[in-house]
Amino acid sequence: MGTLQTRYGGDEIYTKNGAVLIAINPYKSINTYGDKELQQYKSSIALEREPPHIFAVAAAAHRALIGSGRGQAVVISGESGAGKTESARFVLVYLRYVSNATVELEKRIHAANPLTEAFGCAKTLRNDNSSRFGKFLKLHFDISAKIKVRSSC
Image (cartoon, rainbow, N blue to C red; front, side, top):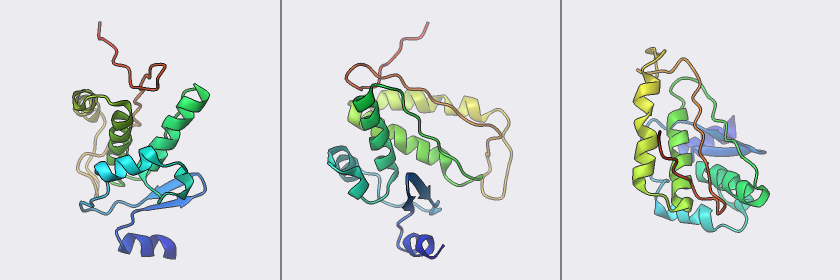
C-alpha cells in the first residue's frame, strides 16, 4: 500500500503488479495522455521497461494482435467512480493513434455511450451516473492491424 500512496502523491496514478496495471483515479486532470506519451509507447522497443501506463496496456494488446494474429482482450475492472470509462477511452485513443484512424471514428464509438448509460444507472457517492452492468466494445482490425470501419446495414 505504501508504494501506491507514494506514487499517487506524485501524480503517478499507474502501478504495475506483474501483468496487472493498477490505476488510482486522481479525481483531477493530469497531463499524461498527450501526443508525447502516445508516441513513447508506440515507438518503445521494450514496453516492460516503460513506466506503467494505460497506453502500455493498449500497446501490448495491439502488438500481441499483430504478432499472433489472434484477438486480444483488455479487461478493466473497479468500483464505481474508479475511472473505468476513462481508462477504456484512453485504450481507444491509443488504438486509434496507432491505427491512423480518424478522430471521427473515435467520436462515433463514444456516441454510443449515452445509449448504454441510459440503462441501469444509479447515483453513488463517487459517481452520479454509475452503470449497473458491464460494457463490451469489440473492435475489428484489418490484416495490417488497423481498425476496420464496418458499414452499417
